Image (tube, rainbow, N blue to C red; front, top):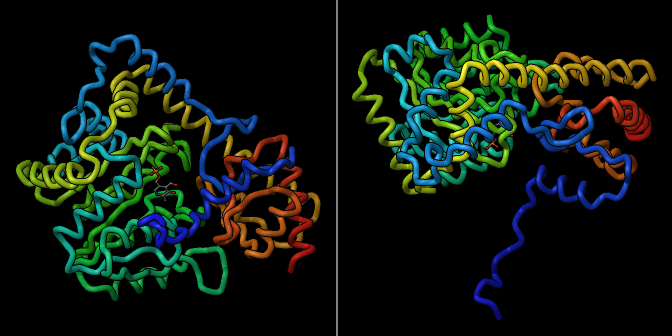
Length: 412
Ligand SMILES: Cc1ncc(COP(=O)(O)O)c(C=O)c1O
């Protein structure tokens, strides 16, 4: 008998499991709206033209783009590009040398590094997540913080209304102990697709300043939500300008289509102007965490990011590519909404039009999510009936709308 026979079957990850079931499904009309990965108008994965060009440059000059280990924090040009994309080239926090940056493993690795940083250096403070959030936040938190529980702050209304309960949220920020850490989705909240307005972000910033709270920004969708890095980076840029201290987990999975390359960065922004020694210390602490965890971050994705970021022509092309993705998603939102209304689907489907980013909370119940999967091979996530808009195409949108109509009519 194996020495490992006591090992139990692990709990299934809902997104991964849904992908497995989807792959096994023989229905030619099947549609995967569970996973958050962009697909083109034919439902196929899309390699951004700017990424293809960058890869040509990299593969034609392997003397420059070697496969050697990178510096522990990552290539300086990569780190510069990460900061410029995130904050904008002229940002005051860059000029005042208030940012420490380390390459990391996409958004998840950056969240992990950020959490380890808090655990090792700031653990006596309370840690808050939105009352509804990306499921992995809790998993990573449990891994790093072990038995230190996290708190929650209000996000949506509790009565099922698909809107932010802003009064409740502010109340929670105000009532929290001074100096608490709050995980904030910088834009394109996953899974709801509902974000704060700019005015609301300013109010939140004022509370954070007054209460000396620390922001832990999860930035997995910059550019992807509105098509503009500036718009989608608004919350982070404004908080940093105003001296709110923060950690930012930056992912290039969605906005560069580099899902499997696992490239991203973790930034710590402090409030001591021109204290580059502090920035160096903070970067060093992150390097130590990485050294103890995966040792070195991979180079290929980093080369792609820095090649695009430091070549004005490629960068221009890249911003066009981002617009292509976000516009296609917006178009699909409108098409699905129009079709649901045209065929008389019971319910209010406005959030499909008004939500932002990859996801929409459709409000379909777990029973309805099961029904639409079994009967129509349309895969959604159970949590809020979350739908990834990326899997919709002009060819399947009518099929999906009809499946949704049948579902809400047949499963109350
Ligand atoms: C809210 C949020 N944060 C972070 C991530 C991190 O993704 P990755 O580790 O692939 O960059 C995701 C991916 O789905 C996400 O939705």
